[in-house]
Length: 293
Image 1: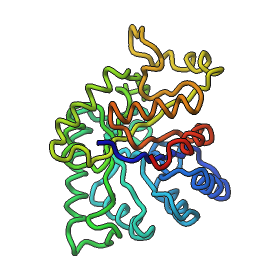
Image 2: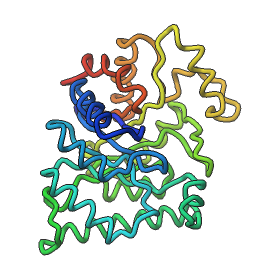
Image 3: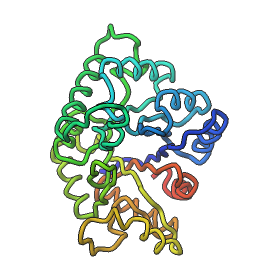
Image 4: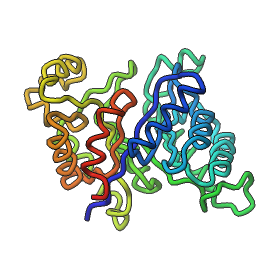
């Protein structure tokens, strides 16, 4: 069973109010189903950016993609999430991650927890949010029953198990990240193991939970060699496979890239595809080719 395609764009550049409005409206015009905002220092602040996006668009859902959960007190976070969902008439998807960039913790004057500690905080936050939103007396009351759909970004087994238990959407990061924030891209063999592990953990929820893939790069045929030069530092040690086998990259014509996404949905289950802001226009022809499938 495959779920219908959905398409999101993650907006990353802090700009003026007028420019932000223009970007959000352009994303809607191009057919994106979701407008996402990341949670990194130096990028747009997620909650005010999404509130403005809601004001100037009508169709796309709005997603924190993803919150650096260890930065937040879960009870205070619940208030902001519920308030945002209330004031956007239930258009929010809540994306949560464990955080991975050590320099951001240091810039915030916070200790950088171990991977296990960061996932433990994520788990605590998920339980707190779910519990508060399930309480009919909780205020502010989110517009969506029991709160917004929950997206959890995961790659390691502990985070994948947490996502299997609680997430409505699982976002696969496409590789492991070091403290410097550099992602080591996974090939299809590794991705197959990760998605199979999650499907097993989901049990009877398999087929109901969306699988998200964050596309890191798209290259037309004439751009292939230049694109490969940009990812040298992100390749697995000793990688000798085809670049086309790196799951988060797309190569070829729009038709070839659309076919690659169809295969990745069939093989791995990725129905919800997100691109980064600089690829928003470039990816749009694929939306036209895949929309409704």
